[in-house]
Image (tube, rainbow, N blue to C red; front, side):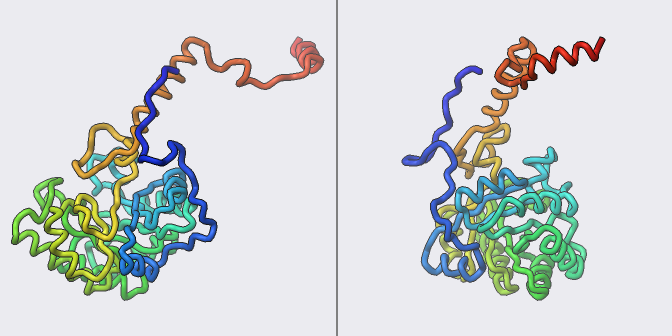
Length: 305
């Protein structure tokens, strides 16, 4: 295989994933989450869609793991998040659950699984908890209907994370995948939605693709943890899509993505090298095969005659 420069890693860190030396690390809970906000400790959140990505999140010691409906575009091959359904999410969430011990696992409610009524929303949330082991669920939007759904789910005893700003499930209505809140009226709407979700009982809210200055203005008015993605550094924590931060995708992605590896290129190089070895009969080599005692081989030859 041809050599390939290693991907950059944060200063002072090894290129290999190391499990934090903290065997007493406690599972993330809602009270602990609130305490971290009070102390000003930044919260780390990533998405995960299967057992290996969950293990990477666990090893990194992140606080929150979202089984996102972004699985539609990252692992299922769709061009938008709306095609993914509840059964897809349950399969993915169960796999992630098997790989997690300490982060709080949050399951996205996919498009079409909570919009019809509060009853539908509660039923969907219950399935995410009972069948997939989610510790909480997330839904998008802060208008009257999503706030009502959030309140109903919280009333059923299931923690809810809200999501305002760019909400991918309704990106068409928002004019596409672009930043929100870039004028005073739009920013005020985001503020109203965030406050409504907080009032409905959401334990945290995601701010997506919102000007950093708007986030700074809103933070003093909110008591629950705010997790940003393209919303600047003033939030209580940050979230990135697993495949974006590790470069398991084509293209550069949104401007707010910082790429910490380029695994898609590494995978392409690895598979191409394997294919070349097979075609040139360089693989498998003697070191990849099993042996048999010569006497047993001689007996086999006799039997084959």
